[in-house]
Image (cartoon, rainbow, N blue to C red; front, top):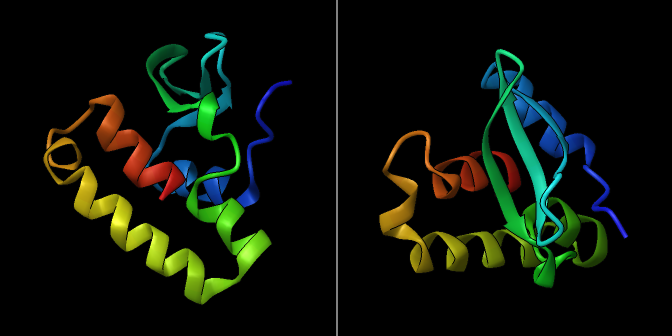
Length: 94
């Protein structure tokens, strides 16, 4: 089952001047594309409903904000390195 890219993620990608599409890798949610080239595959399919936009939809803003905070703490080292999968996951999924 492919990941459904939420409107939130599409808007985040647009702000960053990249495109997104369901990933061609079976274990990833989204491919991030710039200049018609995949620059990162992000989001583990094991956690298909575990990202900020899905938490917003299923549990509400307060819970989603709490999960976002915990995600950013867990991945603090990955988020700072520009153009890595961790960087793009933070910007598009969180």
